[in-house]
Length: 181
Image (cartoon, rainbow, N blue to C red; front, side, top):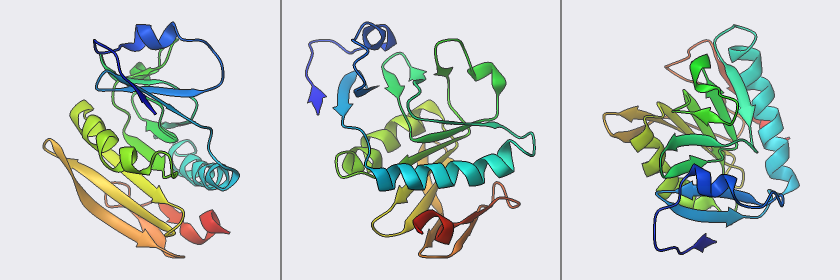
């Protein structure tokens, strides 16, 4: 659900909202409120986080975070990605992640799928997020998008029980079968 206002909202507006457990994001100055994810979404998220932690954190390459956590991408963009990888510790502040993570992962839900594929894709690219992965539980598919210039292009797509090997991180292998079990 998007709420209409006469001006673009900022992180300060978000911080002034009640702490009522609802998921709120500001994208291009517009507030979006979404319901909590369903259990399967959370299972897939947890399983993917474990695999990403094994590579990034065990190897000292970065830190994994997951929702709920604000990511301040710019004055009018505060996202709450399902999973993110921060390789630059300077982005981690007391209030949020401030700047573009190395990787953002969105796991599609019926209430957010269209926004994840369109508006968030544009806003993440504009902020300079180098890698954007879209996880589609229904299709058992991960689409990896790499920022090239100002837009994303598809770098890897894996489905079913394949293994994801990404050209940016060739030693990282994601076992899709483990995500869907």
